[in-house]
Length: 207
Figure 1 (spheres, one colour):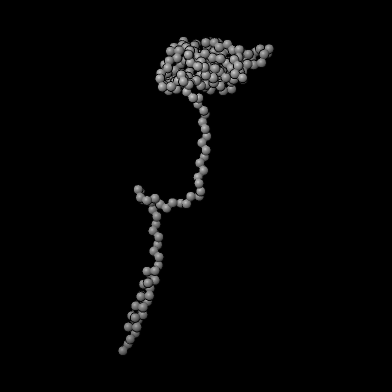
Figure 2 (cartoon, one colour):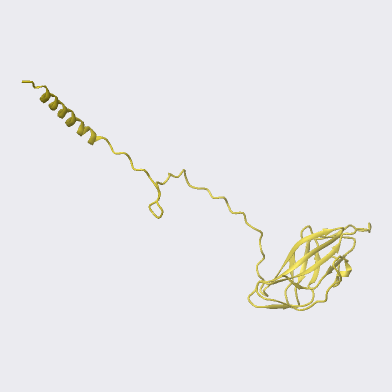
């Protein structure tokens, strides 16, 4: 009687039985990580250390609001063919409307804060410019946050060698009667040459 088929079947069973435990012992593959909309976030990457934020660069300082609620600042100086033009800005930084009329009162100050011998004219014709004649002063009502400007003109002509050129470092501005004077520093100062004259226009609303 031929016993080979039984022997082969038995051997095959032994091979299958031996391989089954090995297949069960093999570790399962790790699941792929995928970000689902609205689901759990993916794995976090270890941080390389504490982050260093760039220090903030401070902007230009703004003067505190005076108790009268009116703040004066100097706008950039525009120079053309010896004529200097600068705006004096008046802002209502308070909480109530304020009305100003006429022109600001000016004093040109030197290096040590002393008043210089400068004639302030309430007439822009004292320092002619293009753009037409001066306009009359009118009342200007400033609501909180609104502003007005007054133009200041001067020339740096120097034709008198008997004295050095006159240079004003600061400008003292009194916005209106009963309002304290405030001091601003025009960019580059007021290079008046030998003229000794400054002209100022009336307050005009901005915008």
